Image (cartoon, rainbow, N blue to C red):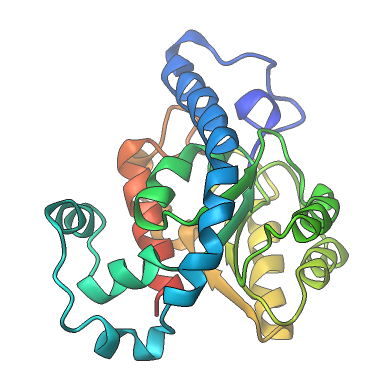
Length: 245
């Protein structure tokens, strides 16, 4: 799997989206209801999925003889994934933590990673994450693979990102997505903090959404922060390729 105030996510952002962004607002509100509703069902399936999961290095041989269904072939085509990548993702338990960008992309993520527990909320700041993480662990909802998309709403300090990583713990694999928020002056600093954290912690992998999306304004809604349907496909494809590598 990153937000702003009232979907924009900056201190100066308005409390309501302008009319031209109603599509984004409706999309995020709909997704927020869906992820909340479906999380408990996902949680009950994650233990079963964990037993079926294959490590990326051995997945190719495990899935060599498996035939994809027509729906799976369609998903693989939509997100430009190989059969091994798709089937690895299908059985991979994931906990996704983020802000409105994670809410925005959640439907696409669950197309590829159906066993994803999404803990995302509009306006979430990185400093709020540790308490959320402890709550997830207490209820058994913190899986071995943790996808994080935080940093859209403000600058991120080294201590804040360290606190998040320590809360998750060294035995889990953390995939941290860089932020695309060219409308705010903290974008570079936040992404530098993310990259530096991956050098300090061996269980942190950076997924460089900022690098991939930098020259693709057509992938975003009018705010140039939240991916539109096209951007969500590219976002999800990038995440899937990193998490199943």
